[in-house]
Length: 352
Image 1 (cartoon, rainbow, N blue to C red):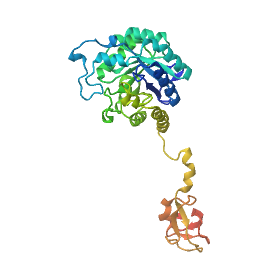
Image 2: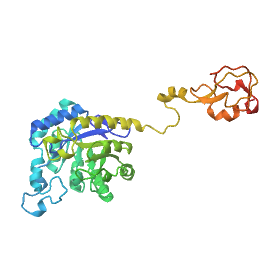
Image 3: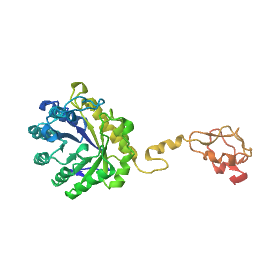
Image 4: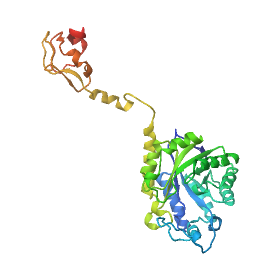
């Protein structure tokens, strides 16, 4: 995939997305500061969510429209009120996108309706992200694909069949540039439920590159995902968890995002390729290996024993594996203590 001129793939370092979501907490000034902080931390992009409460649900007093999971961060809240708090006003998009351009990073968003797709295309989004819970909205995916922009589709909750349907909808809409994200849609996510081993299976099964949208606490899980081939890593981001914000509890702070950028880059470099034997950086260490040395003065003709020859450092003599051949042989000349053993210094047995 290309996002503007940035190539995303397994040969490149992971593409890091700082998800603002509703962590602006209703303040454009905070939203702009989040963009600045994401850029300073080294993120490749900052991401919004583009919806209105009315496009998401109904403003109605009914138990079905209240979050009833006691383990949810938002337990007891009306769904409409939560979306009203979390939404990014549409008139903010232009200044937020402009600030990202000034800071030299990308800005894009997750559209939750067709008119949101139109808005994002209008403000110059370089790609579109389909959120996990929208991955079954095939009409939205197809419409987003028709924009001609690259798509990133998150797959939290989705079965194999549903992922296949989402990809098919994107292809039917004309999308040729597509990445899917392994995701677990619980907030925060237990690392044991991340199942990162699914990433290479997804890549093979669906024939597209795969990244990770992560909701665990900390950066251990996304760093580990790099070893499984994750090419994109998305983490929620806030200026400070103490400031609140609907997603602040499971969001990274600036110093943590900076660490994520640095450590995923290191992890990607560490994957390398299949390799045996000394690397370029190890070659100097070869001299610290053991080899066979004469550890006493030896007169010519002396039959060699462990009193005369030992395996020690450095590595200028015969390899230690030859010790059994050397023992029982005889010295071909007078030899001083500290001389590395070589075949011309021993005679008899198999050394001839």
